[in-house]
Length: 201
Image (cartoon, rainbow, N blue to C red; front, side):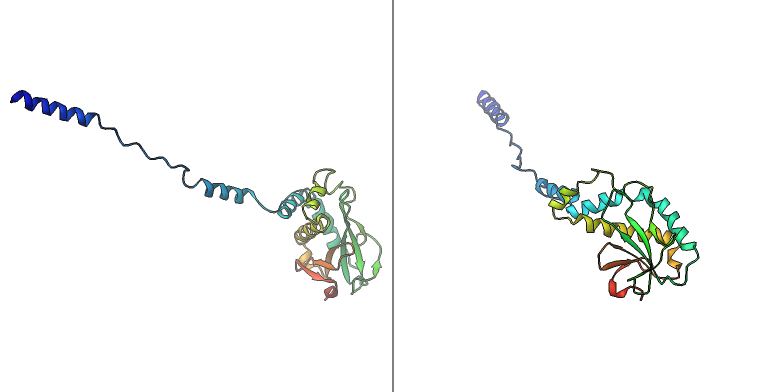
């Protein structure tokens, strides 16, 4: 009888030891991978327009100090009574600093004064606004970015910052900047875009 009981106990222990352990469950696709990939794409993404704006703006700040000094000379110069509006014009030629000053009548239609510092190019010896080949202008244009208009917009708004840094907020007459042949002007005092019909008001 004792041998039979002992044998049963041994068999029982052996069966428990031979039972297979449950295998850990593995997800076919770890959770969160697709979402994380999407977030990464969003973080590194952005439109070509935004990319152009950042790249173009990055080339302007090296002109900041000399431009402020040049604008300060204009601001402190004795203003002839005939000048009613000071207009700065942007050309589409990035091979130079593309801004020139013009002294205008109230409607900013006719030039009325032709001597420095109220007439002529600014920073004429500063070199190119954008170094040759530094920006892939054709590539941006192919992606639908209007590079000339976009560059002028960024330059005008940055120019407004420099105008204020030079003391332009207290200038006695209205001052504007625009792209050549454009009907939209950037009001340097108010730092906002206006139409040609609002000039001098």
